[in-house]
Length: 346
Image (tube, rainbow, N blue to C red; front, side, top):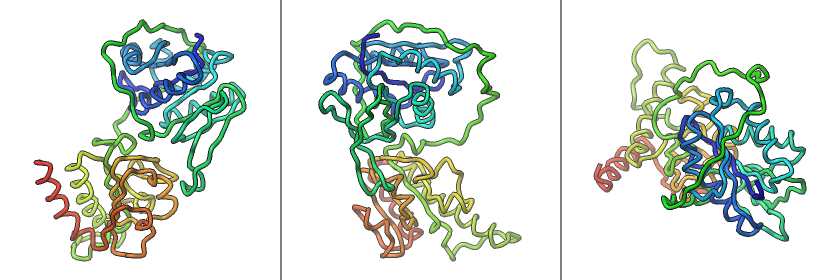
């Protein structure tokens, strides 16, 4: 265990989160400058298969455990093992900016008495120290930060870095490690798993089509009889989100939403993009009926291409968008979806 750069591979039942391979690619770039290779850590059910894949994505050393007490993600058990393994060995510890990755980074920083540089979008090595670039002030500015303590814990924003190419010629033998906490010491218990919905996750999607409060503003729609005013509003919004979903499906993307749409009950929280939702960096982000509050911009301003559709020409989202369409989304989305369907042969 002589490598200076360590990377936690976030996986669930044998499937690694794509952001983990991006973090591994970043780790290899840092290792080239700091010396040595990259050590990957893989925990949980299916860990052995993911550990083998980690070699193909660039890891030079891989440790894994799928012990019964580590089969399910439980933060105290995972963080305890990570902290024990990296202490006095790693100079840099990378996590993908996933829900699990952020939680583990925070706990490990307490265990190791060091700091965390979260949601990083750029990394460089200056005089032997890692300098991280990350957004601040809801993404309006970028700042460079250095963690003076060791290990330097960093979470990398998903899709902010290119993923390394899988090399079938690369292989290795992952090393099994034992947990450091016994089952009776772990307070968290996993009772069951319940699906949160199908479709593409906004966290992973290359294309996101999002809707805001504007998806409910279609007076031409007549809601079913017997609904009160709020129920009628939600019904209209659901019809609007069907248009958003159809475009997303044609483009092979995910459905996103503003906080206003989620708070109004139009769509579940799992779709929320923004400062209090998911922070995303897709190749294409289409905002439909979203005014573009600063909290929403904080979650999507690093998208490669932003398209805004809104009736209000003064909406803040237009200042961020590369392409803007001033008009009624209910008149624009159906022909746009049909044009994309023909263009893509779907």
